[in-house]
Image 1 (cartoon, rainbow, N blue to C red):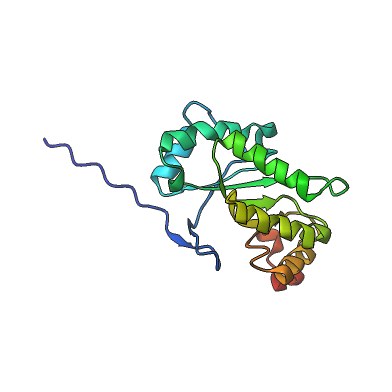
Image 2: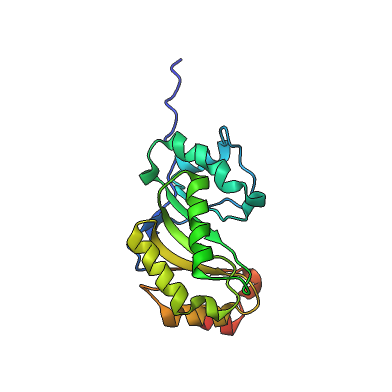
Length: 194
């Protein structure tokens, strides 16, 4: 009896990310976990299914996740086939553009790539991080070619305030926003309006 040909797996649908021009899968691979640095089956399976958007951060897996992702990027064989997003966190009292720029350089070294598709200020809790000096830093990083898009993430109690401020800044200053929104938030009018 002939063995039937294996079915081609269906790919995760794609859509444009806001007004960025970047086409992304509707699911991304959140990398806040330890990965197998030699050969991570989850990453390869997700990629096979069309999930080519990897979201990491300097702090993930005790600061090791980006180093663990670097071999996978090489295994794919073409950096341009992936969408890489990373984030850096700095306590408000020491946060400054120089520190975030150095953090980006560390991200690039850990991931063994010369650019990120998206770089975000992580866990923004103070609107000062969306002020002119940080927006200028983002613009300078885009001009340098180290990043394509600049943004921020917010996860704590003042998410509506942060989103409203980011919306005021808007593109080209803030291209991408990532924020906490789960089933507990559905009735949160202030957050929904933001």
